[in-house]
Length: 277
Image 1 (cartoon, helix red, strand yellow):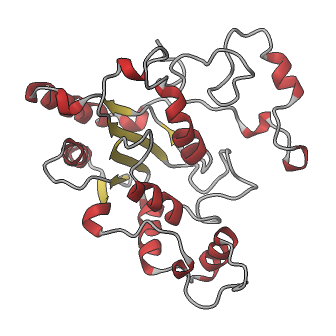
Image 2 (cartoon, helix red, strand yellow; image 1 turned 60 degrees about the vertical axis):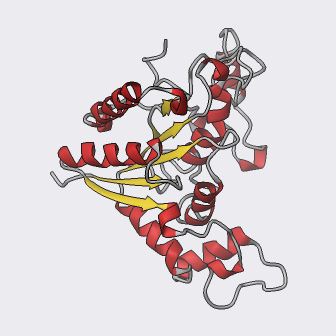
């Protein structure tokens, strides 16, 4: 069996950071299990996160009214995307697993990583209207993990905490990016309040991360409603009536996003189906 390939996308400025140590630990653990490991260290690469007309080579299809999505779709089809975008897309094509390693900034990815997603995951390459949110998309055979650190405690990200339920924060990242593109989404690896932990605790977290990665490919995935549960584009992609009716007696909504006005399903963005607390 051919060795699997992992791509670690890192967004941190400092080599002495815990995020950098998490990247190193992941690379070492996966290599010990026979994986090939690719790394995109975005700050080290001085990666350009800004979308612009300069992302395509040659003339645009409509220079008077440039629309980034359609223009990059055509450029991708015709091999006219810039070299830096193509190089990252080639890494993604090779990868069976993508690990996003970053510190949580303002409840989301750092700008440099968000820009990497926006430029690299262009229309056609990463998604289409026909395949979004489905197991037929370009990334259907790939798995993805968000691995990130926070500046504050786990309690602050609880349903009663001042930051709010972390499941709500994870929804746009795990559903709106990863699931939309068809990734099989694995449980996030979250290191809370890392700057306030003693060294022995950080060392233990690194070892736990390495241990998890030894069997990461066999993990269960986060569950989302299948695209078949929704009407087509002509009907506004609304949840089908029979699906809604079948869930009408449930205490919780089916997902964080499609909650049907009900309480959110506990830990649905933190735990894979069948492993929730």
